[in-house]
Structures are given as structure tokens and as C-alpha cells.
Image (cartoon, rainbow, N blue to C red; front, side, top):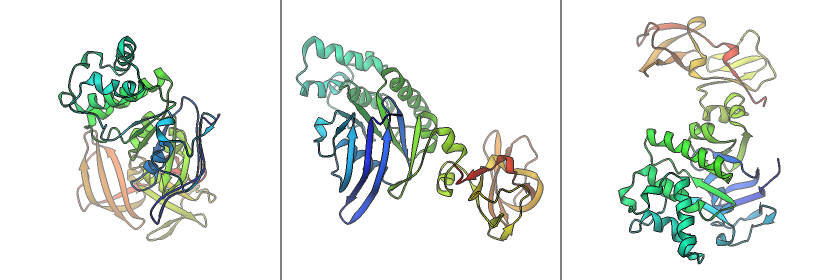
Length: 338
């Protein structure tokens, strides 16, 4: 994989705080990369530095073979779509998309053609005359996307652009973003704290923690083989138990598990990977949640709290009931083995 965008030992900060330290990251041309992590992990700070909105304290940034570390933001050919979209409410959809092109001196038929192409790309060709307040949140997001795309950026960066949308619109916009990215081939970096968005859309994911990279991989690698307990927890593993001396390290002391590989750092189970109603362990039901096709249970056990998801078709378990459960090795992720 050739490096289209590359950071070398990139260090960033605000005041006395170092937000990102010695970050080495690469993105291939035409790739859809997600920067994933909790608030404060440094993902948006990294995006701002790549875009030229924050001067690095150290390291370099390369884009398409050019060192852009000290290049002004308006000369980097990088498009940005912010969480707020930053649209002009008093202007029409056409004029919002045309704004950057006019600044570059484009006008007349060439401008009309360029804006029309941009609106067609995002499916808003019939909305050119509308004002921004007349649009839904998803439509506004697409206007912001078109405004960036018509500038033909070398790199398009999106900072939590779906966070203001409801669940249905988020699903629709995921599909829109994937379609636009694949059809245009633009290199795209998507900054998000939502693991579902990253897993659903990205070619690769960079998981960040405390200003550093915790793991880089495909969605399948991140989901199935988390490199650390932090990554496992972030992508939905609710039960994470360290392995020490060939046994599970639990709140109630070491626990033997048949077939356990002593070389792994930890084992992790998602709620649907814990088997309810049979097994060598038992716990008291302390929480029950109906979730349509499933029921989710919180068990108080000698191993610590265990979350379980079971089919709603099975007999429901009552609060205070003692139930058996199993932690099958075949449903566990081996954490830290890559």
C-alpha cells in the first residue's frame, strides 16, 4: 500500500497539553479511512493538523508526495465537512455549493455545470433553489459534502458529520457517503467516536487512545481480533478477562477454563457470545432489558459483572433468579494476539 497521506512522528498540543504524540499514520490513495476513538483521544486534533488548522509541535505531514507540514490551509487542497456543516443559511443550496468556486474565480456556464455536477453526485439536483433552513439535516449534510467535492480536493476529511442526525438518517447517510466515495475515488478520512459507523463504512480503521494509535486494521480485524482490552471494550466486548498463568484473572480470583491458550493476553466475549442456561458458572440476574428479538441480562457473578444477550423466544429470566452460564472459548476473541 503506497502512502498518499503520511504523518511522521506528528506531535500536537494546546498550551501545556500534548494531545497527540509521535503519531505515524498512512492513508492510501482512494482509501476510506476512519479515525475512531473516544472524546479527547486526539482524532479531531489530528484532522485539524492535517487540514492546516493547527500547527504541529513536531513531526511532518506528507500529501501526494509533498511535505505540507508548514503549508497554508488554503493551499493544501483538502476539503472539510464539519459536524455543524457550516453552511450559509441566507444563501441558496446553489450558492452554498458555488461559494468556494466563486472565490477561485469560476463563473458563468462553467460554474453552473460544476455546481450541477456536485448536486447530482449527492442526489440534490432538484434542490438548487432552496434555502438551507428548508432542508432536513441529512440534506444539509449532503450540501456540505457537495460544497467540498466540487473543489476536487486531494483529500476529504469529515469530522463527526452524522452525529446530529437521527438513527434513520444516519443509516441513509452512511450509504450516501460510501456511494460518493466509491464513485468519485476521493481519499476520505472520517472522524468518529461511533464504532458502528467506522465498522460499517471504512476500508481501514485507526483506533486512537490518549493521543496515540492503539490499533490499525480492517473492520474485520478490529471487530474480531482487538489488539488490547481498550479496543475490545470500544468495539462491543462487554466481558473482558485477563489471562494470567494460564487462567482467567477475575474479581473472585483465578479461574481455570478448559482449552485456554496461556499465550493470549486476555479473552473477550460479546453479550451474544455468553451462553445462558447451561455451563459451569452461575450468577444472579440483576438487570433485564427487552430489545425486540433479544433480551439482555446483567448477571452478578463471582467473576464480576457479566452481560448476556439471549433470544427473546427463550423463557425470560426474572430479577433475582440464579442462572447458569458458560463462557465458550469458540465465541471469545483472543485479545492481544493480532
